[in-house]
Image (cartoon, rainbow, N blue to C red; front, side, top):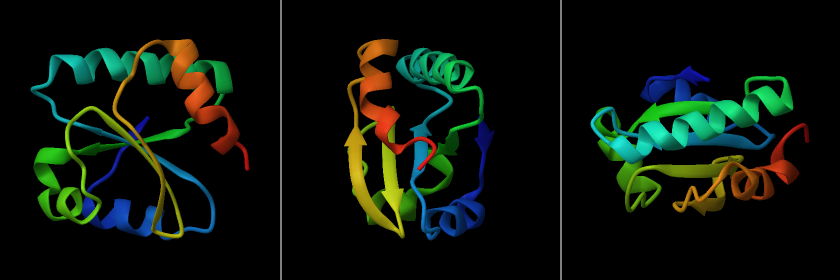
Length: 104
């Protein structure tokens, strides 16, 4: 899982493919647990799937994409929001939320 700065993240989100961004804060304990779940999924998918974005360092993007809380999984294509996931309930749940957007 690669962490991107604001400019890199903006460029990634413009692509004509699904971008799965893990929005987090380093001070959020729940975010650390959610990140472990996503890393488990990356092992399952056998590739880096998620982009890591620090909400604290990207306040304008958080406002633009109306991120209400962290952790958040923001799924986008061509800078359009496809889905937001706030409840990282379990690895199987997150697999269900992400599988259709991986490798497309």
